[in-house]
Structures are given as C-alpha cells and as structure tokens.
Amino acid sequence: MVKLEEQEKELTAFLSGDIDHHTAKEIREAIDLKAEQCRPEQLILDFKDVTFMDSSGIGLVMGRYKLMKELGGSVTVVHVSAHIRKVMILAGLDKLAVIQK
Image (cartoon, rainbow, N blue to C red):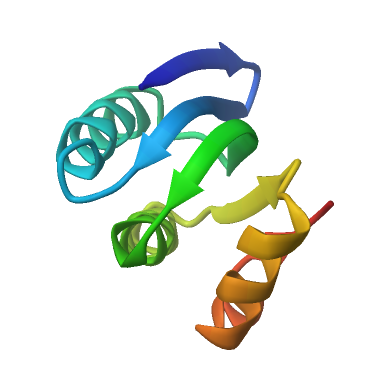
C-alpha cells in the first residue's frame, strides 16, 4: 500500500505492509502517475511501515530512480530497517539513491 504526499518540490511515498510481486505493480503505478503529474525534484520513499520486501522492492526503487532521472530529479529512501537496508546495499541501490536509516 502507498500513501502519496506532495509538498513543494518533493513527493513522498509512504509505503506500508509487504512489498512483493502482488503489491509492487500497484505501488509503482501510483507513484509514477503522481510523479509524472507533479514532476518533483525529489522523490522520497518512506519504508517506515514496510514489514516485508522481496526483489520486487528492489525493482520498485530502481524503476523510480530511472523515472526520476528522466524527470531531472533524485530519489531518497528513508526509515529503512537494518535488514532491508542490507538487502538494498547488496543490490547496489546505494549507488542510485540516498538510503537513510
């Protein structure tokens, strides 16, 4: 599930629950639609309420990085649990986006 908030030049996506192949498509589509409408300089992906993430979550972040690059913006990932942060770093996402605890 995702809740989107637009504020000045930022779009924040508050993610919650499981991010897997069942939920990732809906989350991607919601974020992409809003980002294309408001064209933010920064997309913030808030993982505070994410309880589980598989490789679909990696794809979610990578795809949003690509979209924001096309829009001339950047991605920041915040409130990442230690386990998910480790998975993201192993996947190389720290080279594409700022990952904060």
